[in-house]
Length: 454
Image 1 (cartoon, rainbow, N blue to C red):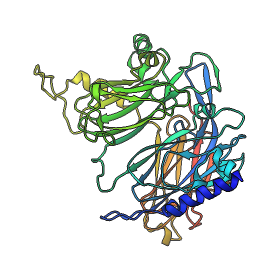
Image 2 (image 1 turned 90 degrees about the vertical axis):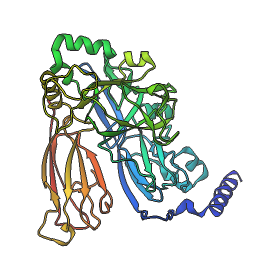
Image 3 (image 1 turned 180 degrees about the vertical axis):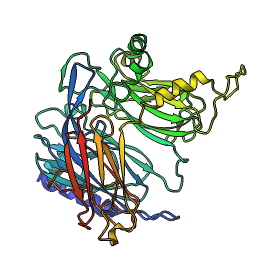
């Protein structure tokens, strides 16, 4: 009887709102599309300093999982493959989706979409609608063997970014996702940071950073970029977007503070700076901020629950002079924008080592490759990557027809259908040679050669 009541309730909700299974139509110049994503749930060992390893659970090999993008009105199809030995799911904070894509214990209880709680070695496809703009969490909702909080703390979280095509963001030089969280339970060794951003933590916070500089100079600091110290790079004049969130796995409040930067709210009080240049992030809260970079420098960002920063939740944004600027003698005027030769030397040494996170190697799916049986279609068709350096690979479809990126080893990775202009990323963690092809146009082939990091 209970199951019948649940079924009747859900069925009635669908009858009242049939768009739960369909897309939305919008006026204006934007034509909604169907976006396809593939996520592989897999374990990854992430080094935490020199003496600890986090045995993380991930979507596509990274913490957080890849940021998924859509525009209002789009349909979103996400295929999730579970390579762990636990039941895992994919639950989002999007709205207006069919109940069978809920990815929670309720699917099992109701007997509708029970496969959304994915058993080990199996897959499930979820269907969503992008109904309004914002940043929306996705995370594992399973409690197999461990509580949901344990599953999430192990790294199974990420965000959807939904933009409004009628009110697009300004032209962005960079868009970065920063997940402010706590180290998952399955970590071995000592000296790791309990509080992390994007899976990284710098034990001891800013005091330890100064100690490292005193001992090893600038090269010592740079050597930790995107190893223990989250680091981003941009230039003066760039507009960048920070998509920040607190997955809330352990119920801890964090905040995001970036030095000397006006953080402009994009989705809450639109266009209004966050008070005190500080974004409060209660558990389960997301936020999006636009920042216009005005001067060169090395700017700290960190949690302003200061004990969290002291325990590792710090990062740096390296802002370089405009690429076209020339070296001049520094003026005594407080308003000057010129730079001294010494500062340029420092920034040059920084930019030679810093990179955005995750580190990405780009491959183009060539125009007209779907009609040219003599073309391998992927450019470059052979790439060499190094674990921990540039082992996240992004394919972008620059053709006007649909393609895939499909591993020649069955089940290893598969992009699903990539429409024109769509990109897909995969992070390679294990050294080896990986061959792939387009499942629609089999003459299109490529190879990724992965070697171990230093």
